[in-house]
Image 1: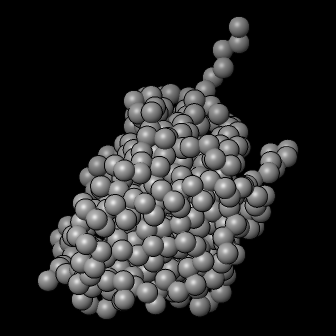
Image 2: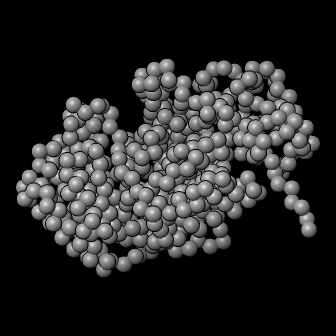
Image 3: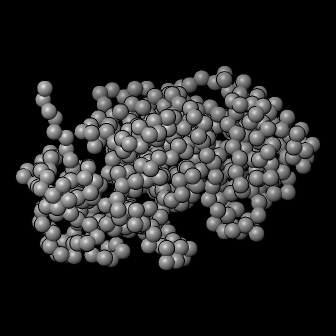
Length: 94
Length: 389
């Protein structure tokens, strides 16, 4: 019987630089998703939170749904958890 | 979808089409809710609704909403005939309402408790009318519809962190499909657009619509700060953040994802009937129960409703398809949920889920009851702006 490996993240739009964890991801866990090669969770990432799909420099836009949803406040490494700790604290960007 | 199956409904004399053929019994004012409740017991096949409004507010904006919603409920194409029960001295008395009911194009009986012999005799007259309308409507047959005839509204309520990832994304795919078939799709909840005005405005069909979107969202933001003060920041809550939403724009994107990606052709006021086809925004509140009444008054015949925490709410005259954002909810409230968008997490492709939803939507249009419809979970209440005097 073939064991089907289920995707553990979802990329909502092809322009996105973050993916959404579909379940809790442990540090070091391999990311399974079509079009994603060799991505490892750099730290524990809770379900429905974001993981960086590429290196994101400080001041760069976070793209989800194909749109800007925030701006990074520091360099974010590929595979890192993306949340309020590494995003600008502005309520939102106009 | 290889083949689009036929959809059917009831043609109305105003040119609109319903997918249900209800007799609606509705009070003009809360004072006569008990009369409507008596009719409901006498004629269970009628759709009887009550509400808490109709008087005690005299400012122009609340009057406008009151008349638009009451007349819009009766005008809704899913309603084949109606009984309006008033008191006589209320703000929304029948003389004030009449101009809004012109060319209604369907059988309508108006009763007044003060003129029709008190509550019991009015209830008897109302029951008699409702029963007679029910028999008449049974003679009407379904006719083939075109997707252009349909106004589908999209709502979310009791959302969770997965709503914007699974259910709203899947509903967005259905929305795009509907617009491509020529249908009209409407979504609202202006408070849930805060932070995304620039994104929505970019999708507007012209500058006028873009400006209207910016105005709407700015006003929602302002009103939100005014009425909630320090709590305004709660538009994004600690619970939202625990769920992985880092910014208000991200939260709002999850909400507006349910509208899909097509051009926005018009912004209509709460409960107003759109003049355009395609994707439309309603300038209405985020509270789902109030929002649904606005969609009904706008002439919507069908609704898609995503939920993550789980709400059983439907609408009395409109089939509401409930879409669970996660499999836990779908299992826990399976009697209330029509679709499990949590299947996306289990590996189901988005296109397959979208096609499953379109298939169910066609069956529902043709008469299959949704879970809220079958369970009698319709709720009716509507927006007010000012406190009562």
